[in-house]
Image 1 (cartoon, helix red, strand yellow):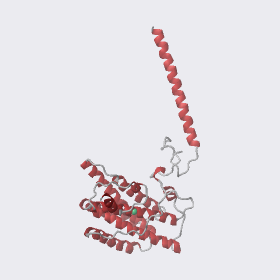
Image 2: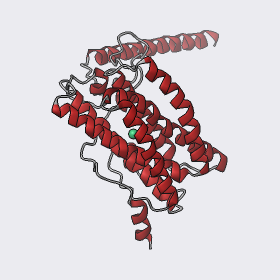
Image 3: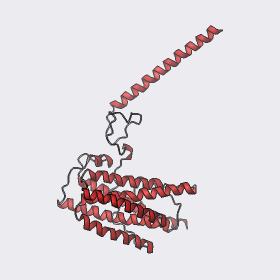
Image 4: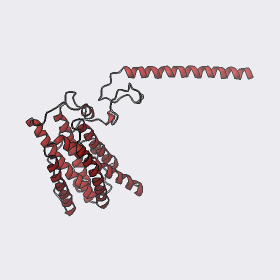
Length: 305
Ligand SMILES: [Fe+2]
Ligand SMILES: [Fe+2]
């Protein structure tokens, strides 16, 4: 009886080790196949490759292939939200006031302007996303997708900064300015968001309207030849899935399209709050860099009546 049991155990061990060996062979041949495949920057890298390996084909540490996309260049650049109430007028007044300083300081140094202002532009999404996150936890309620939309906006703005850093390096004075501005603007925006989220989103909507104007002027300078239309930085080519021969002009077009998207998302959120639609979910296009119409906040109401 004992010898039968030990024979069975022996056979089981043999089978297990054979199965294990076969499995290992399959895994290693699969890995070899994956490594032999030609990997382009625009196709997701096989997930089970070791990302810490020096042979890992994706060169960027700050974003992954699945975060890249093609900019929506058919976006409406002329949209402007007419102030509807006193808080909208305050939001527009704040933005126009800030614009005077930016114009006086940077004049036509568009590369430096972009580097410094993108450090500011990346703050509201993170602050708004954080407050939406905390609110969702506090109220035991879903966020309607707004946390992800706002954090994505912050990340997108930070990638604008990474891109322009490859084009223009900030001076020591500009670095000091960024330090001061970040402290001040973070506190200011957090206070506004707590006091009136609608005003906060409206401020971003108007800031983005101004960003579109600035990037349009940047494009005009490139077209006039005042700014050299240098080859696009590699990071921009990979992030926006651009042609490898893309130029600075293509990068500015992509950034401007992103700003138009942020404008529409923030005006939409402000309009929803204006209509007291606090739990209205974010449209899925908001996460896909697609078209978002801020007027939908009002149309949805008409449909339901
Ligand atoms: Fe930006
Ligand atoms: Fe933006």
